[in-house]
Image (cartoon, rainbow, N blue to C red; front, side, top):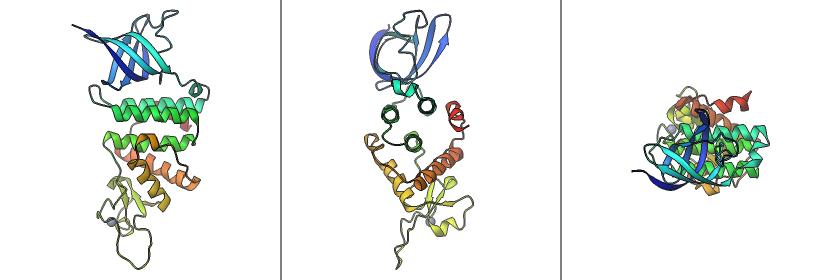
Length: 252
Ligand SMILES: [Zn+2]
């Protein structure tokens, strides 16, 4: 027997099914990622039409039987400003696509749902730059997925410092293939490493150690942003190598 359940969630994507219906992928607090059907959503005047859009956040009353069928919707936040700026729109769609890619139906995905929500709010408010928001989101998302980069000690020799007379920085390079930062002497023996600034290292440590509510409260210099973008892109390419559709609109 089916039952009515009330879920809090964010719409990740929606597609047309049959003549009038929509199939919606929702990342929910209570049941992780689900696929639900909105019957008649494409009929004129359907209350589901507005709710079946990417990044609509709210409460979904769903009949849970053989499938999930949306029964009623109460949207709290449509993020309207994100739809007025093409760069913000494609970035938000990319964030949803990424959240979809890194989650599995039936898993507890609360951390990823909170990360996505906080990120969409930050993108809408525009307090920090969109490119910074994107790299922070990518690095944190990969960590939640289980691909956390090593930033507190050398990914090769495991040391976090050496006792020397001078106070020169120790973790000076990044190596995606080895999973994170490496020290100068290990870097000499590895291909495909590159130097990172000390402030880039601190920023990576901050992103990975802070809760999602504190992620978008800092700014960085253009040099650090450039390095963060390189690290994030290179790390993803090495460990995931998936081409996200929405990203192609941002990068041309
Ligand atoms: Zn080392």
